[in-house]
Length: 353
Image (cartoon, rainbow, N blue to C red; front, side):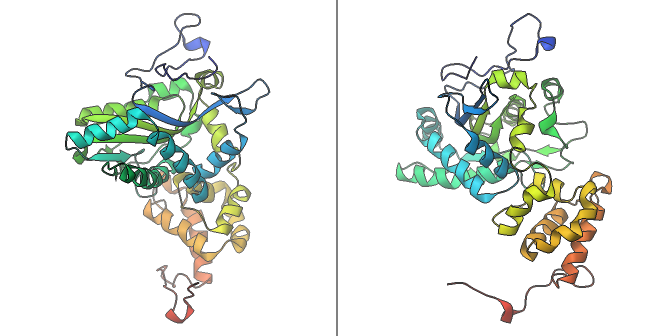
């Protein structure tokens, strides 16, 4: 299969050691019907030379993949790029418009939600918020009620290294998350319409688990939006780990790869960015690295670490790096001796016309 055709429900082709019969495809339970209840901005394939291509047309997607990598680490220009394409795709999809009109006819609210978060968002959370803005501008032009941003809340630690997980590891994950995981789906979703948005449809297990959670709470109607989707053949050939390669196409997990974005300042701190900039393996590099980073960017990272309680969570492994950020911010006068934020004096405020 070279791509997912518009009239085929999503299926997952798994490696041969996981199938019951040669050549058999494994269909995800309660699979998403992409003809009626989902819209995808980009379908990603890999050609025989290993280059990323549009699975529908065969055109190169290299620039799109580079933007995807930047989005995953919080680059706001990349988020806006995918939000624009995804909103345009949805607004030209008759089934999406019918979904919105059903909600209006039945006097339901329509919420848009992405993956669960604590305080610091993921790239998908940023994408959902921006896509909602673009959708609402289009819906207003055709007299349809706006969608409402909402969040699922994860109160326990999110798993590290999900993008590296194999298909079997993803499939074996429980619907409610790991043992002891606490994910709160808003009670206000009951009886309403909900759009679930994710940045990538890869194996499909994350979307399917979310669907089951929404069904459990009594959501009346659902629709799915994906910025990108990997063709099933590529998912199978990489055992699901294609997500890791997409995430790291430009920003590869090193401090040097995020430096240009931090210097520009046009970013929001997301969970993946925090894990690069706080990783224990780079603590010793931080004093020299931070010399070239604006104070405003360092403050974003420091506040995000506090928002997600990274000083204490994950076995306190990030605490040494946070201490470096705190020391640098004290030296720059952004924090006082007790570690409290100091607002800039009013005579230092600069507003550009």
